[in-house]
Length: 151
Image (cartoon, rainbow, N blue to C red; front, side, top):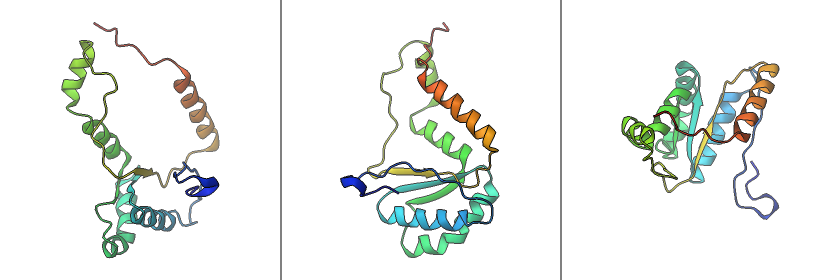
């Protein structure tokens, strides 16, 4: 995972592809447990509620034995998005502030004292879709942020 390499004590972002039947659920559960034991809050997200629940239940005994049930959670990716948005505050109030040019700069959500990590298992994209997605993401990141001049 890059932690502790080259004199660094930071966890580096990693991306790997594991094909169907090669043990995504097992690798994810073991990594989630290990990272939870290191103090990370781990959020494993999936497009499918069924797969997310199945994967969590596969490792539930491990998470319970090591008292990690508060550190490791599994959910649908839409739940992660909703929770992240909600953590920043009341979305209606924040939207009103934005529309009236009163949104505080550097608005931050409530942060936990422990570092967070999200993992996305079962992402099966065709390589050409993945490349197009990467190009689009890079293009969006290089553009200036939109200005709220709608009033």
